[in-house]
Length: 220
Length: 193
Image (cartoon, rainbow over all chains, first blue to last red; front, side):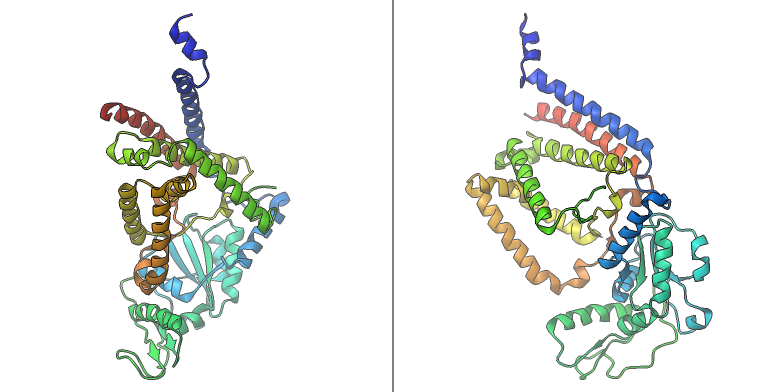
């Protein structure tokens, strides 16, 4: 038996390792090639009735872990950053919309939401005056299989209070002051009026102004 | 019943911690077995004389990626419940550059420094100390710059979303890239040694 044949039969030899590597490479190539034809592991279809319980449990977990909503400041940051695929959906009535709208938002009636088309990689944020209708819209969209769906916590009211008119109370903690600094930057971007109630730094409104009928649209 | 088990409450808090411990030990053992606990081995990556780090890490990426994809495709893993960390483009690019600079300077990364320290190497222990000092410093000072470290947020951003192609196409492309990379690494090692 020559040296080469001996090497092939000895476990741990260079030749044996080479054949294992080749085998693994072929395995990866086959699995990778088939994956390219396999599409998406998660589909946009409502699960079969046998799996519905699991699906509902998944939604319940998302709600319990508070992954179902976004705060007004986070939404403001997303709008300002022009987050790719972001779609802000306003489900309020025409009368409610007279108070103003979140910049870049689209108006969609709650009843028409299920026929509105979204890309599966869109980030959809729904808002209403408070949050009830928006939360219902969240359930409808999640039930349709859209994954990146949130509702605005506190709705339009939260947008007005937290983004357009953030306030810092006298004697606020350092953490609250930092949060206020961030909110102020966002507020000014959207044409809001941050205020400090004890009359301190310049550039801040001392009194609470009347909410504007519509936030100023800037760059978005 | 499908994974992830901890999220499905099939693993209690202690059970999840125990599983994490076991996986961590296996990870450390694998790194040591691959020789990644020694700084010269890792430094060889940057001198293009020893691309073991590239091969080990890319093998791990491809194994995990193919495993997750096919388990999900077969209905054994609910991939929507697997957490995807959020992306902050600019802060993470800067962090990545800093990480790379530290990696090439000390020849160890967070995982391998722990492995090196666990095997009694002084350089590994120093890197671990430095790493924790950096974590402490970042924790104390970075929250003073929220407008910077929360900038360019993209949420849980994945390659299929970025490229607007099905998940499977990305899996196939990354696998092809890895196989080509392994072949290229072999060639580079042979040429530069």
